Amino acid sequence: MEPNKTIWIVGGSSGIGLELVKLCLKNNYNIVVSSRNSLKTKELLDLKNTLPEQIHILDLDVTNKKDIKEKVKEAWSCFDGIDIWFYNAGSYDVMNIDSWDSEKFEQMNEVNYLGVTRLMTELIPYFKNSNKGHWVWNSSLSSYFGLPHAGAYSAPKAALVNLAQSIQPELNSLNIKLQIINHGFVKTKLTDKNKFKMPQLMEASFTAAKILKGIENSTSFEIRFPFILSLVLRIINLLPYSLSLALTKRSM
Image 1 (cartoon, rainbow, N blue to C red):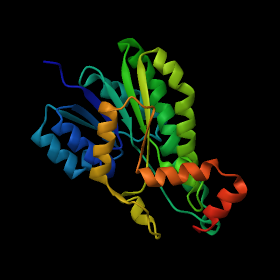
Image 2: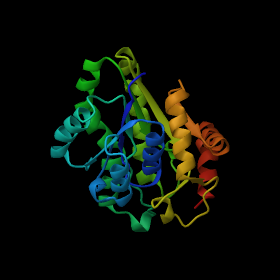
Image 3: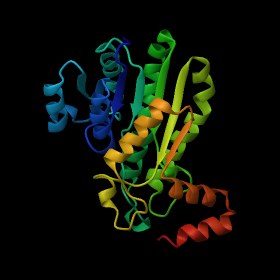
């Protein structure tokens, strides 16, 4: 019988991440789960009490540069290695011109993009030594085209996709599989901030199930859903700017 795979879910205390934790436990994964306040999250602690040998919880703030090295070492060692690294940490605020806040711009860039770079540079020696691995980064369909009031969120998500495209060939040569997840609107505490109607709004549990299915079964670099919303945004991205910007202006 093959040993259980180990997945490190970064950003697993709520929403999609927490639902993915639950699904992975049901599917017999060993799980390292982290967020800024994982050790104070009741649902994670309850899961730990139920399956103490299958889950390890650690607090990790991806914006804290000094903390990264030791937390990566801890995450790698608690189950003697990591098979899958899933980056799900996210920060989101809606801002129009009148509410621009440089600190919020920086926060979203720190969490949605720079956190990945800090972790991957510490993780790569471990994965190279094991000569295998699977990285999955949770991005967004908003990475396809900048939408009004959401640029502070979608810009680092687009940068994340661009980075993934850039490093995928090198990782592939090291037997490390890299996938990106581009999904639409998901009902979480982050999207609760939105005052507009969100097309094809999905539940976090449904989204987590789609992600796990893609991780386990898909050979594609990109996993995207839902179909209609992803198709519309891809078409907008292909249009001349005179048309695409006129279309997105209507959403203001």
